[in-house]
Length: 306
Image (cartoon, rainbow, N blue to C red; front, side, top):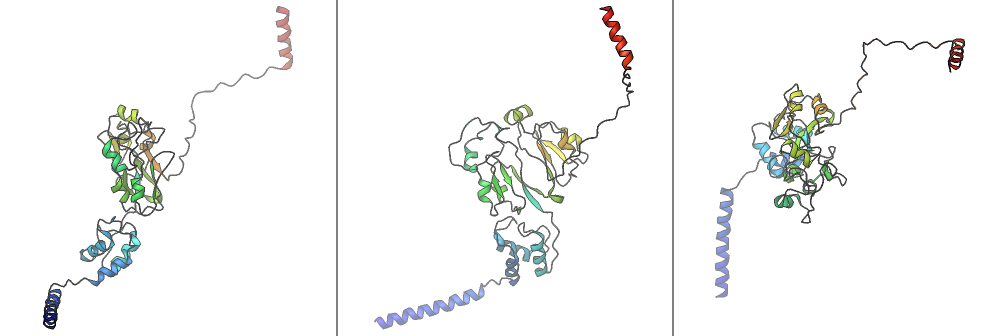
């Protein structure tokens, strides 16, 4: 009986194996070998900055796409996309280098603390509980969710200002810090020629007086920058100004007229000091000194009168 049972089980296993083999052949999915080739030249960061689930997902999307327009590996940049294009026989569109920018200038001095948070040091958790430790409910909380999200050690919290700061030499514009910030103060912007950028370092949507009371460096939505801009690159919406980097020509006229210093200019050379104004008024020459003899005579005359 035992022998019969063993033979029966063996026969059932053999028949099942045949069915499984047939099913695997029928439903087999053939992967394009180019996907592995593209994935091999990618940096392997799996940061998701490309908009796809990891490098494997991006490689598959590149192979299936008709063109590489709009496809970009933010970590590898143009050199990596050139390799991908060579493998696929497609053209890689040139993409402007991007960098993360922290749009908050509410330092400890400019934004006085009104209370103290004793909960878990997490921006995501703190933002769901209350507005923050200061009167501004829009600014950087400074608990470092962005720091934990960055895989490239490109962002840190400055202990003196309490604000997140980006190391642009390390930033790959993967966008992980942008997604991690619950306040939305981190933004990807065009890196600009020679890494020069102009942007409004504030997202406070309160009205001017309220925003200024909460933070001395806040944008008050006065609109002076928008009126001064000759390229119509600045708009004021919900009491806060925004500079469109696709229109900005970095003339920096807006920086000069901002009353609160909310507009930042990065990596520009120092401004030249204005030359002194030349007036056309007639300057009267100083009276010539009198000869010594005349001066002594006047002194004697004054003494005789006395």
